[in-house]
Image (tube, rainbow, N blue to C red; front, side, top):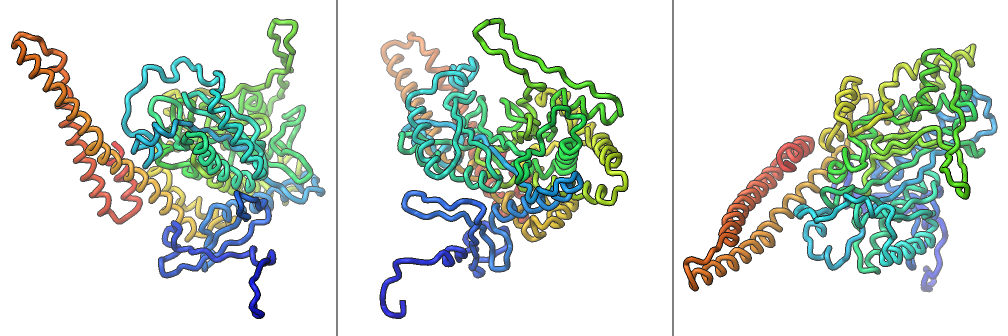
Length: 578
């Protein structure tokens, strides 16, 4: 300080703004190396917290030219856009006391735990997060005995420690259990505001990995670390609510008469149908491409599961027929001491990407390592756009009751193609989806360029969620990540082949050859069928592996000479990955 004393305190004003280096962060061309200045701004809607001995403040991150370099800023913008449009609609229903509409999320987090000493032996796990080579074990998940099995003591100790660490940070960890694949587990929090839930989920992934270290374990968050068993997802349970405590996706006692609920429901249906490409690309990564389409992960085709009751309600509205309602049914288990309880009016569908589950939608396509910010900013923005269209129509209505009914009916007719309650794994559904005009964007390279489709740019910029420059940068960053991830996998395969696998085969071949020569030295008549067969088999396999590694290396070198990022991604998809 001017009088020579050391400053031991600082004011809150000094925490509001920070100045990190904006050119050292992936910016997709928004920042050059010589344009380094960036700013962080305190996000007061997400709580500051103590981690270790450090005060951590959730912040937005922007460049010197005010371009958003983070995922927090566009997420907050999307929440603001949805709030504005939802309030317009709610006021038409006479909800004058509602001052704010917020989306909430409860993200279920799946993960694998493996012993650290085994992980350390695997270059592929270390460098890429997944096994690139391996043999199927005699027992995988065939018996389905892990899911309902007892949690192992070592894993239970990890889970208890993890809960303590998360609760210290204010993260609402609630449930924990085994998942379907061996060594796979899940943690689910209590839902909270989307922005806070996103910050909490980022922290959860970090703390999961740190706590695992303390227990001699490694936490794998890759979407498909092991072939042949379930991959890890992150189910994004999304809903809309008011500051007065009303969940706008909760049906009334008679859903047919609950017009406000139905209007918001069909708004989500229309949003998902019209912006299915945005939802798909929001979860597109190299890792998630391996997971989607099998082992309880949804297919790449976006569809909505509503269940029998709600589908019947919408059919009744569309056809202008009377809906008789679903009778309450109770579960009778045939044992006097067991309780009777009401059965839900609809089943669950584990193959659906976007399922209605009572008072929320469960978006099941996210990969384990995904940031939930991406899909929620797209979902919020798409629903905001549809609510804006609805408000524009209804605000000029002279007969609100009839016009809102006609709007709901019209929306159902135009967008019912996105509703599918059946088996998402059935090949017949993929064919049916194509007939309905639904998109099937199988890979990141297929999906990501659609971020710059004219309709998507128009919607996202109209609601000020992104600028055109921010969208262009994100498309480039995400494709760059995809290309680099697969290229790292290719180079890791080449490295493991040349330094580990072929040397191991050659060492074993030498042992077999010595066995043959020693046996023949005793007597030329001694049989060596086992050794001979394996020598021939392994020698041929070794030559083939060496040749394939050479091809892979040349393809990786060729990739480095392609300049355009979309061409790079297509080359990775069509040449390098196969």
